[in-house]
Length: 309
Image 1 (cartoon, rainbow, N blue to C red):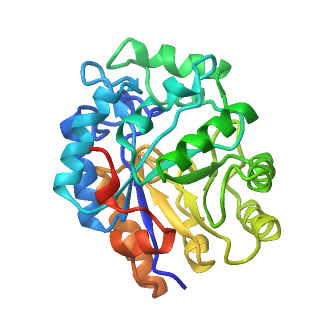
Image 2: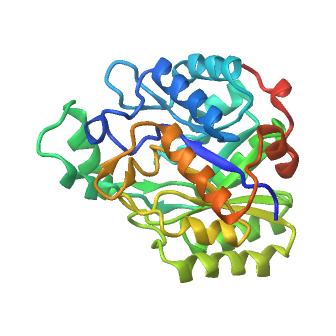
């Protein structure tokens, strides 16, 4: 099997500060946490930005800039930037940070989906910032928006910058949408798939569904035409599907965006701690952990010398 690529999703945009005192919020905190995760074994850093004043999610390119500059100086890891699906916001605005910084990788969701995290309201009775409960409650109404027209525009931007898509799949429909985009020439094989499980509004975190998604991808794209990774959004403190993913030849994504717990009821103190758990798992199974340069070779990335930050 290929060396195991560990992606670390450092801070995300759906977990709120009250949920964990260890969630990095400022540019310095996000960069430091990312660099520590790379030191622990993460080959790819999946990055979001936050407003440094109150820790709220931000897509402002200027909130990304200091994080990207510090991460590039501090480690060799691949950077994959998020790409939000905000309803009513033009693709050019949603993807302004990708156009500005031209990273090696970027998230790409091939379709729309319910995308909710209001279940996290049960985690606290009082909140560090006023925006947090409103933000969580409003997610009942949120749709992660990517129409086919949006997808086509995003694919053109990714190709223009030679950005490798980290294709996030929330369910089976996204796989079929992806197959259509490939058939129409908007995306090229091979693909890198991120199977996101356990999100409210998406596919449940069950072993049979993981196996089904991988087998369906084989049928649609052919063996050898994709790599895949299990995203760690599998519930509060749940990690039971990771051994299966590693033994099946998949890769893994872990981090405080996806799961703030080290185990049920125990908060992870850092992204590095979560990455270290995956490194131990790989060792127990007998699978080597990929370095950033090995990840670049496996995924066919353009290299850090071609980014714009």
